Amino acid sequence: MPHIDLNLIRTFVTLYHTRSVTAAAERLHVTQPSVSYALSRLRVLLNDPLFTRTRNGMAPTFAATQFYATFQEALARIENAIDSHHHFDPARSEKRFRLALTDLGEMSLLPSIMQALHAQAPLIELEVWPLEIDKVTQWLATGKIDAMICSRPITGPGVERRVIVCERYVCLLNRDHTTIGDHLSLEQFVAQKHAVVAPTAGHGLAEEVLSEMGIQRKISLVVPHFSILPRLIEGTDLLVILPVQIATSFAAQARLKVLELPFAVPTFEVALYWQTHGGDSAPQRWFCDSIIKAVASNTADLT
Image (cartoon, rainbow, N blue to C red; front, side, top):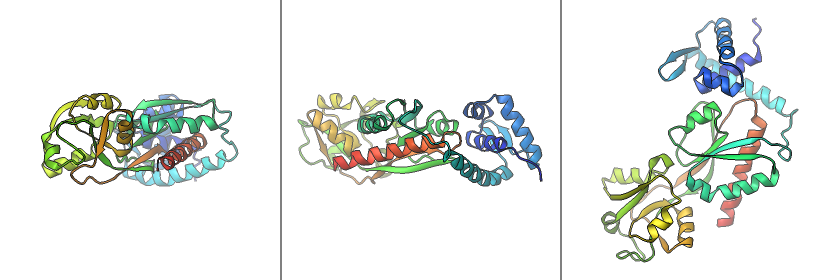
């Protein structure tokens, strides 16, 4: 039976996640020729090409897909066993963690997350990345970020998910709106001008429902972020659809009011996503667990 170096298995799993020799080398902190050499050895040992180059990156063969499930599980067990002998001490760590968030997440979740992280680990660094919904799967796979918080379903090899908040959408508008009082009808909703946030922010469920209903609105303003909305809405008759938690917070800060939408939109889940991979599993596990606990505590305080 041929001897297989554990590093070859780690290289294979990382290549499967990243679909890129360059990205795998960056994650493993080795050179690209080292990854290519490891892949060549694996191809000989396993008697299969394993990956083929395509326009979209390295595509796994059928055999590679079968190998992945076994190799990933074995590697995780080995690394978890090693982690138990190399305990991560958050109180002494100076590690930098990267978290992708929308500006909505920054406003509603980041304060409690920061407080919880620094209470346990005062020396760590937290770098917040603006969430770009079409890039986050790649960011997770290549290790550019440690985790992300998003309301959109994210899938990919090795991507883990934990729901941290259940939310629903409402309408936010000027408290002194010229034609709308304490109730919003569908006719009033359609007749008004609207502000929307660009879909890259990850909030588009209500727009999908409207499209399915065949309802077209007059969009007068498209903004890339949520944070500017209170000042914009306060001085106009524009309507905007927002998650209820942040809409309520905005209404408390300005002359705004929150009304129920005149059509049914499903509630949605805000989830924490992270990539399972080797090397830093103990710090990542602490990071994700701390975020989950911090958000749960903040949600309990608001209810």
